[in-house]
Image 1 (cartoon, helix red, strand yellow):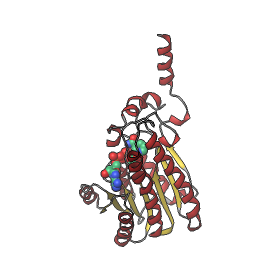
Image 2 (image 1 turned 135 degrees about the vertical axis):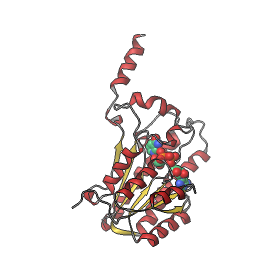
Image 3 (image 1 turned 180 degrees about the vertical axis):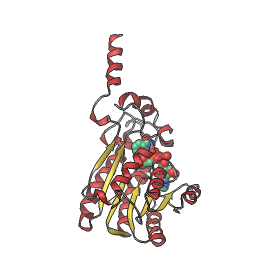
Image 4 (image 1 turned 120 degrees about the horizontal axis):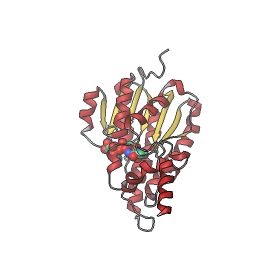
Length: 259
Ligand SMILES: NC(=O)c1ccc[n+]([C@@H]2O[C@H](COP(=O)([O-])OP(=O)(O)OC[C@H]3O[C@@H](n4cnc5c(N)ncnc54)[C@H](O)[C@@H]3O)[C@@H](O)[C@H]2O)c1
């Protein structure tokens, strides 16, 4: 038996045109899967051609687009085995007292409903025994002031993951979500990530960002048939952040107290 092979598995990855989604699609392809790459950005078509993947232009916040994506992927390769609901957006830093409902709505539509539709239509076109992986964030465990709307969206991803795991268990479909610390992708440098980018290195025991390829390795692990007893989990890949304060952070606090 070849460990962690994805040979002949039919996979869909949303947000596959950049960062984590692209790294995951590439890794799945290299592990033997037939991969459908979905993104709102049409330039993803070129990346898909280069990797030998199928591309479907998709806005994950649009229910009709998501049904079309899963149907098209199943028509292209056969019934689905793996769906990665990964597309997401961030918003500018804003305190709760200032954030308006439009900010919450846009994050909710993309980050939450994108996952909800991915589960609803992914499972519909999926073989029993399949896998659904949702991208949440370490923000689901709490985050800096000014990140409220994003935290709201990512905590919702954890919740929907858990109920989906229970509802789909009779079909042996496993549903998990991944909670990464800051990943070195375009999103990490976007408006809204300034505080995180400044302090994450000092706050994180491993003192650096996660590489997209390192996070993709976790998706590969969870997608493989070797992992058949893991479901309903929120799994952190955070360089030790949740374990406790980094030594360099303690040193910095002590140094500032001595001044
Ligand atoms: N980068 C980080 O620090 C970090 C940390 C934790 C979690 N995440 C999460 O990881 C996921 C991937 O983020 P990334 O860092 O690769 O970001 P990224 O900006 O590099 O890539 C996101 C991709 O999603 C696509 N996308 C955005 N809105 C879409 C929509 N409505 N429909 C379809 N595609 C859409 C974009 O076109 C882009 O290709 C997101 O859910 C994000 O919230 C990122």
